[in-house]
Length: 416
Picture (cartoon, rainbow, N blue to C red):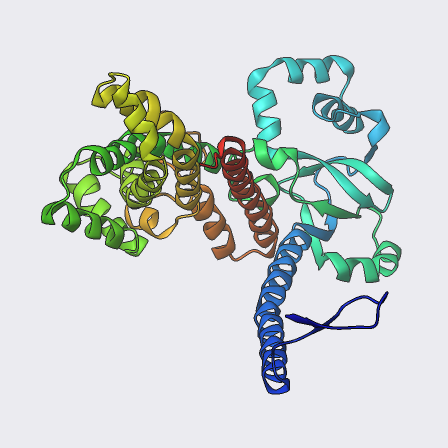
């Protein structure tokens, strides 16, 4: 830029050293850059819209309208009659069936009778019924389900359905994802099926994965970064670790089937699943831990050595505490990947139907992705609603893990 002389008292006028041709070229480059940025932003908007659409579709699939001929009393109860649900609704239902107060108390106080009632019935807070909104309903596994409608379809036909109801028929807007769904074991009947056994199996597997993968992954990363000599063999190990991080999960399933299920005779148990998935995420944990350790400035190590600290004291008291954010984030993201794996677990024999909670590492098990897959494979439209509820639970857990990883990263992040 340069200035030219102006009349006294006026501001100096600036002139550009660029010619008209150069300015036009820069303007064209700017317009091309803006157009390219807009074009590349379109796929991002489309991807977000598609994800939100799929998520909304799954949410609406957890709701359905049902025309039912109840096997029990057929009565619905206002939310105000039993705000907390549970045994209070059970008492109302048993009373509606004609039982006396003494008979009701005998059933509730008998653990065997109480278990039998809960196995055959499900206490639900229906969002809308022909008796009104937010009504408690005790649904039975032997109820006759006469008709089924999706969420929006049922809204459009509610008046006609309510007018055509028989004397012993009800219509419900059933929210399949409720507290009862989280606290029930699996069942062959969709109305009483729950995801508790799958959640328990996933927690067992994830707990053992952390127990195996955390010390091995962090230990390997510390060795490669702080102790291993920089030679051809070390570089060979590093290349193979990075290659293993991209191996398809089905390959790990084949390895787990041969090595742990058959050769070591662990069988199709939680232990086999945990060890197989630990091998699956171990390369990712090592890479994430190495990057976090490498990010610690060398000046901190040199200052520690200058104060007379040993190698181990420097690593354990200086390097690791300053790398904990990156290491923790890598482990959480790796565990989130393991939770969503299905193919390797199917290969090593995870069961599609487990009606009881696992008792230890050598128990048979199922996990949430396999449970959802088995529900979708059932030849019953109501299992689609159950599977959609399971998908929401799985996505919620994954979102919580990703949120935890983001929080840890931001909370302990340090700018060197």
